[in-house]
Length: 158
Image 1 (cartoon, helix red, strand yellow):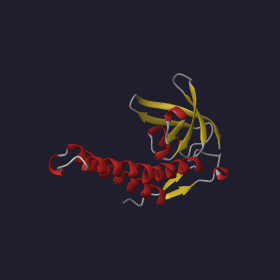
Image 2 (image 1 turned 180 degrees about the vertical axis):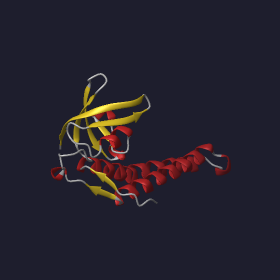
Image 3 (image 1 turned 90 degrees about the vertical axis):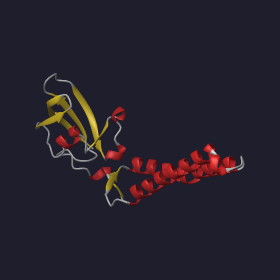
Image 4 (image 1 turned 30 degrees about the horizontal axis):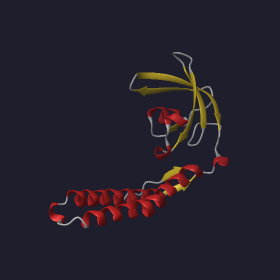
């Protein structure tokens, strides 16, 4: 599939590998059971359950192939080697909205690990891209769906 290198935290890579293992074992056995059940119901040419189970099998195998591709091109990031002089992947950055003075802290992660509820934003998101390379005290002007916004980098940690 793709040869896109993705960077992960140890936690993120373990989660990805766990999902892949689950789909290969439990997911495949569940689908095989569904196909066998549908096959036992007679004529396969008019068996909607069999067709649905075969479709589900195709989707499962596509998902497994996608995850295998991601894992094979995954690179583990060492959180101890993060340069905190500027914003980079795995940086924990506190920014202040210059318009309303609201502060928020995000950790910049790969696209696959992004989880806004957990305070993890992708380096590919508009805010993530706008913050990359910024230093404490610098302002990032970022185009968002709500219009152009200005954020000041207040703090960078690893």
